[in-house]
Amino acid sequence: MTNDPDLKDEMYEDASMHDESGAWQMIFGVVTRPRYRKQGYAGELLKRMIAEARKEGRKGLVLTCKDPLVHYYAKFGFVNEGFLGSTRGGVTWNQMRITF
Image (cartoon, rainbow, N blue to C red; front, top):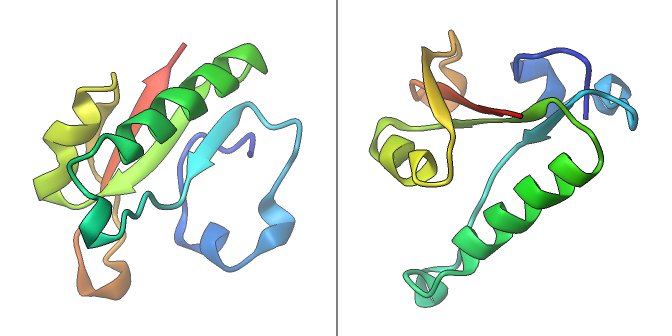
């Protein structure tokens, strides 16, 4: 959690940026082992995270993803805000957000 509305590269390495009472829930990754994919586990996890953030009174959730996953996260209500400005890992990242 953080009060910063954007997910920044530094957040991956600097735990001091975490603020338990922050307005925004950041999602740093949703990874499913190949043999468990297409069974709804990631979707169920996202639904629970969204419900929990809403219950805790957060402003919303933010995540980053590669182009091929934009449509997947959009199914849960995340809106694509476009290129984040990060090329972490040699990849172009899109920032996506749900605002309550």
